[in-house]
Length: 97
Image (cartoon, rainbow, N blue to C red; front, side, top):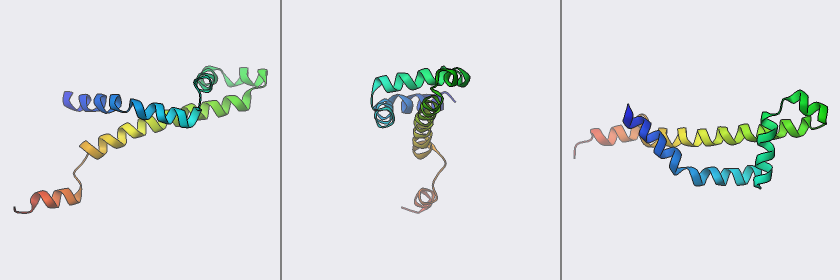
């Protein structure tokens, strides 16, 4: 069990350059990233009163897509490297040498 948690942490740590790359593609600048974080934590009704409702929705969607892609990358890499055995790998392992 501890070995599996270690694998998750190592993959998440090694993906830090990927997180920065995805962030650059989605947000382009740090100020855009922090503006999206601000919109994420601002209630929609407050953004509507200030006239920023569409920007709030767009910023919230960008944050959601960014987090989803980061989590998906870690999960996909863990499944690829440590997941269930693949049929081809099973066949090769059972073949006599």
